[in-house]
Image (cartoon, rainbow, N blue to C red; front, side, top):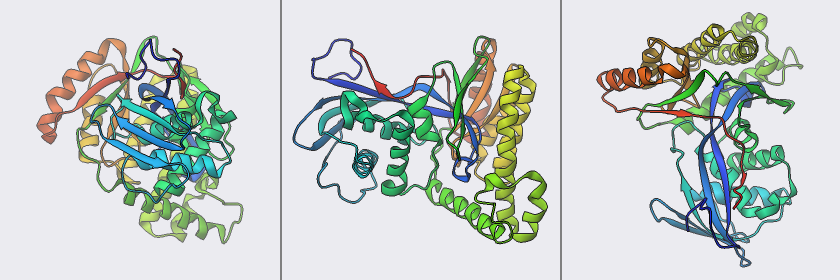
Length: 378
């Protein structure tokens, strides 16, 4: 059974969910700030046959690995990929959304552990697989929030909403601005007639992501607790302005201050990037990306030597407008806005210089904005 095949048995359903790149707004979502992600044309697909036995049986197309669980007896997490499927079933049940068992095959061209939100894509694809043709009668934002609940409450990753939101509600011609407090969002067009998004993968294994991610979130929340003692209107770092940073410096330790400074100024960079895109000022977009990467490297300290090398090579290549790390960090990918006629030059520069600097072989590929998760029509 081939996921996405044009001809398939009538009872077989194919669902899909895309990965995402975050253009800017890193580690701001769980601080109730602003983000600017885009769903991309790398995705997870599940071809499935719905069943009435309340069992989920899912096989990985590439490896043949198979996992099975019962919707009526979802056990504790196992530490394996099936947790994202079981967690989504658990969260749908908690939300009162009816689910149904299925037998399916999962195929993906979305690299795992690359900072492109393969986990969120698996959750969204699972949500559609578990609810069938009706999608459970819920809207895209509700589905994203249920999948976030799966990752927070079952998988145990203390992430924010951005990844599930982008995978659920992606648009085909641009990025998505999301206010992570109000959940108001809107499409943001990108200059894709003359430019393209290029992802560069470090080829390195991401380590310490979960523990370091949770530690940084805890630092942000601790800072908010301290600041709220004197100003109860501060509910998240979203409420701290740049003018308030000297007060933050006086109230928290130096490392926590650096985390706060990144988040506060990153929110401003998201808004500045959107303004620059709307005005066609791509030089300003490049400056925002550069400032964001430097802040993630020096203040939030989630970059890596490999990510830094990719950004440095890209920014030295004519025709590269903007470059920065994307995702949680500690390895993974960079995102680059590149003139279409300069993609080859960037690829050659990365493949020439990056292995010499790191001893690793990179992957360089273009991505296009894509529609959010749903059912693949026959």
